[in-house]
Length: 265
Image (cartoon, rainbow, N blue to C red):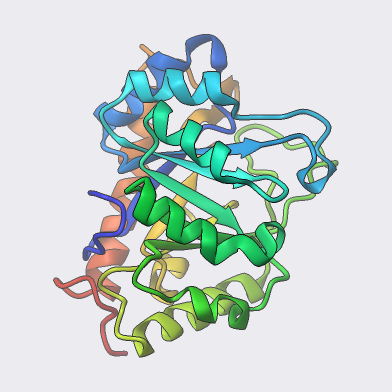
């Protein structure tokens, strides 16, 4: 389903963090065929959070957009992204640009307006765990299509098997619940998506849907397994999406109405 059209069924944004870039196009095509809702790419400048190496560069975005008919999101992990970056992303074919609340600084609403009015693209605002829900208040706005909250990630710790490097603390769920309440109180829960990013899997996603999440970002559960990265042509990617979708469908039926609103509890 399109970004920004809230439905009863919670959506899957397939993250490419754990993609095998040697077979990227084939993995993206299998994700689309398996029924994910859109593709999520982290775009780093090598300065944000002191990551030493850029990731999700324009070549990766171009290859992804050429490999799918799905909408593609560029989640910017950058210091002060500017109009030139947005123009290049639009030219490559992305549908959604998500801005980092912490590092876009005083230009954030100028950038939202530029992306929406000048480029005609969808806009998101995202932040890491540690940013309070109240910081998103002004972004519950008709120009914003999605609000994203990302759980902490101790990347210096090794992961095993298909595990995510992210850690889910109880406060993340509480923050999602507060954000959902803020969106509902503004009368916009039918048009602003709410995403949790990082650490989700089939074992915990129902709890987030119960808290009001409309989209989950998943990379490890869709592209990693005990033996390493899942390969196209094996059926592993389709099986991973199907397993996740079944759990999300059950939770969505339980907690969300036909119009995409939270059921009264």
